[in-house]
Length: 343
Image (cartoon, rainbow, N blue to C red):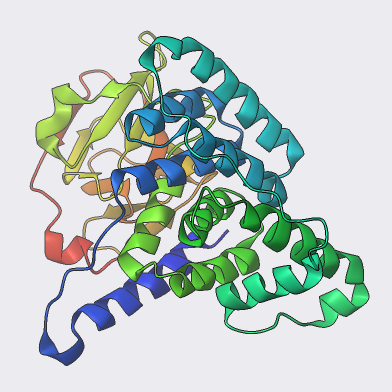
């Protein structure tokens, strides 16, 4: 999914809105409960139950009620399927059982529409509120049943349950779709729906960054990279995978994190990208954008840097090319003005 292009558009609109009338006005970001909604939805959609379990605990600590979290997980079956939704609910059952002594707030229960409700009309009204117009198109003419299910079930049965506001439901949906591949048109549509519920550009950008966090890692994130922190701008994490022979480490960068310019003397390095979006640049050469599956062969004695994009987590395997007497020379930081120009 081209999150880069979507987020670039959001950030452009943000910069325009913040500078309107020559004023520099800060937009309000997500609150702690909304951040938890986005994280719970993202981990559920990605099937990352390990991180989901941690975030369910955090969400309850941040003030989400048990029934609010249930509503998030139930709604997500419409966007990421029954298997992911059911796994999320199963994980939440375990969390609530473990937290019995914490007296977490149950909250209001969801409502059911009266039996005589015209669900198609009800769902159409909600859909118009979210999209700004009646939703039509060839796809609904080709398969009318999907239009019926969207209106009668998703926008009627589910949205009518209450418990969550329409804005909170859109936060959950945007985070879930941004965590999945191949659903860019639907993500774009729900970003606009989110705006129609009152989400601002900064909040949407924040949701997309949350959704870029590492999930289902083949190589674990590791511990904070404190030993080399002085050579990095931002937070990085290090997980050494081997300690003898060819040394290989998984290095993870938070959004905006990058290392200083540096040179590997005598022995070079190979980078294998495994998560997110980032950059690699050699001195006096253009920046290369990196995505999962990319491989960078860094020769010895070449000045370079690498790190995350501003809007995405990033992880790569760092493979040291064996050499006698090899060393790394750390140099100046990557200038903010240069980094901020990257797309």
